[in-house]
Length: 177
Ligand code: UDP
Ligand code: MG
Image (cartoon, rainbow, N blue to C red; front, side, top):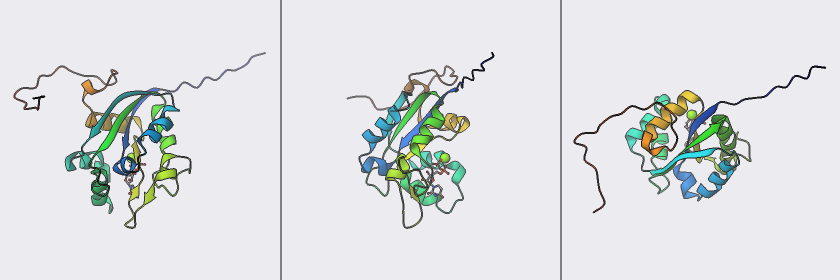
């Protein structure tokens, strides 16, 4: 008798997670990281970032032209939550994109599964913007574009995308005094 054994092999991926300013203001960082640890994925990078207009507009470049775009940029820059920062993380492992999106929940917090992060903690503002607590990349192409936007190769502990040697000349930086 033949027994067919189907083994589902998931691709090893990486995904960008942002804990948005409302997530920080509502003290949800620990909660979100605990929920994400259920996935058994590895954290490959983490940083707290002050979001410039340039970074915000580049991150949401595909939404330029949407009626909510300007408010979305203000939201991710922290203009409405007295928190001018977000927490950015890279998660790495099998099926990372789908596993994190599942815990994150649907874009619209009213439609998101109520046990998902967005379903439990998100809200829609009176002007219609979805304040949905966290961001998660939607597919491998988006993940690569976003991770390269938020992190340099040296800030990520795994070798995930090809790198090249380069040299920075005449770059001013701040050093410890
Ligand atoms: N957004 C919104 N209204 C919409 C669609 C999107 O306020 O009708 C905001 C929301 O904060 C969302 C972000 O824009 O998370 C990016 O939208 P996208 O369609 O990429 O959804 P996501 O990938 O975040 O689920
Ligand atoms: Mg998206």
